[in-house]
Length: 289
Image 1 (tube, rainbow, N blue to C red):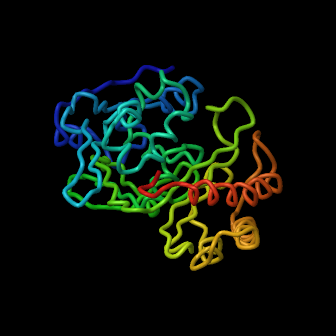
Image 2 (tube, rainbow, N blue to C red; image 1 turned 30 degrees about the vertical axis):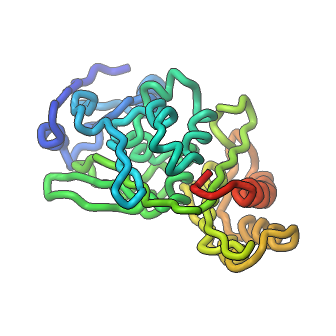
């Protein structure tokens, strides 16, 4: 790796002052687990990394008065995995963590860094999209809130400005919503996925209401599949309905070829895994279990 400056501010204001909106080689980092791999490979050569690790106010998990969650951006993924509040509100996150990379990475990687990196293969972003989550973004001009589903602009691209930092994550109350996340890997169970599918929905008299279906890894960015959602809305998830939803997902998603499989192969994976994810979520007892 080429030499670089490492800054360790103690407050968000100090961190923002160290960023340079005109210089893409100046980057804020949380755990830096993914960024370090890019640096070792020579893909990214920073002039300055602004480590946020000393900003302890951003490492927290709290249940909100309305039944949601407020999570600091520097909260390690392992803390998310072990949180009783997360397990009560959105247990699908806890299950997802168990197959996200390995425990060493989860002990270091942070919630905000995982989201801000913009890698479509990350497991957490599609789950957060299915849960209706939003991030709080802080810049020199103030704060703004962005829904996670609106954050990703393309392959490794987000709508974040270079002088903005994700400071928090909000998950709305889930009530009796049911959710599931399935990943298909070509290696070990915790490997980068060839496909990720996250679903979330309410039910009424045995029918699915307000469904959210998200595809990741097989596409350039995590993406909601409105056609699959329309195929599920207001219907009981029998074999015919699930087949239509899987077909709609495969027709809508812009899958890409890479070392984990061809685009046609991933479309077939998506067709199958949408059906499986809906079945798994429907079998849950609510509360995003």
